[in-house]
Image 1 (cartoon, rainbow, N blue to C red):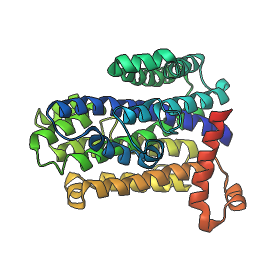
Image 2 (cartoon, rainbow, N blue to C red):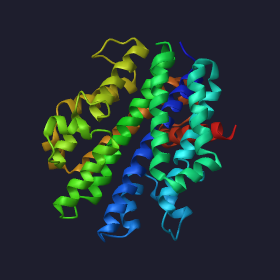
Image 3 (cartoon, rainbow, N blue to C red):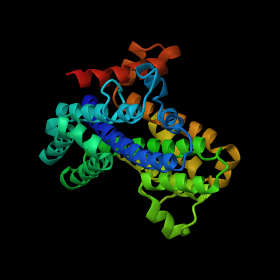
Image 4 (cartoon, rainbow, N blue to C red):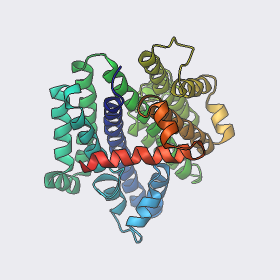
Amino acid sequence: MMLSRVADHLYWMSRQIERAENLARLVRVSEEMLLDDESLGRGSAQEYWDPVLTATAMEATFRSLYPYPEQGDTSNFLTLDGRNPDSILSCVRAARENARSVRDKISDEMWTEINALYMLVNSPEGALLLARSPHSFYEKIITSSMLFDGITEATLSRDEGWNFLQLGRLLERADMTSRFLDIRSKSATSSGDSALESLQWGAVLRACSAHASYRRQHGGEISVERVVDLLLFSNEFPRSVRHCLRRADEILHDISGTPTGRYSNASEKITGALLARLSFAGPSEVMARGLHAYIDELQVQLNSAGQAVFESYVLLPGEIDRHFPRHSRQDSLSDWQREQQQQQQQQ
């Protein structure tokens, strides 16, 4: 059985790289849409960015750091602000530290790629590229993350380390896909402009590299229900929430050796229940419930699944009972987990 410390480093390395990639996708598409909106005289920049900050759970941190925001502050906060623990820079830095801690468990090629990505975002050259050509900068982040996944696929043995790497990537991807949907649920549905809504939902598809898949299935006309169907419920599209959860459920059973359809720990139980919920639902149920409310409930369950992985495989049951009283367990474990990540960044 792999040491829980090693599993934790591999799991978080993968999650942080995936988070950096998705933030790059989000900011790239958001800035493109903002330029279009400003050219048409629709709203202020901060009104456009507010839903992004809210959906990514960074609004409070942003307000504390930028009480009087100016143009460009939000994109900088999401990209290269080291004071933001979830910026692209912070995510890549944390991923590299996790990789360094388990250097003997990953391939040389994986280390080279993640180190090159860190050098890009942490260098004056990277900041200059961002200032001159934001699109090129974010493309490099996305390409490097996808290359890292490809290198991992080609060079890493299919052992427990591989399983924890894949598990982190899949849970993070499911969470971020749901957040992309949540951003547009707050900014598009209230506009009353069908042309604008179509553009904004098209931006969501582009952010998820889903535009081509959508066109093949539904043609050129974009509707909210069809976007939700593809990004939440598709069993084939690799960035959909349901696909990610199905693969995560399979990997959890591979790790524990428990037959599919049964569960041996809370992480398998929560993930399996959430997968079943998505398997027997559809866009009509989401729209009836309200997209934002549905996504909120989904994210709570995804967070619970991640916390259950932590309890099952990182902090052993005996340690949980010894260190954390039951009445304060959820908040305490979350604080402990963040503290561990911050300590890794400071090593």
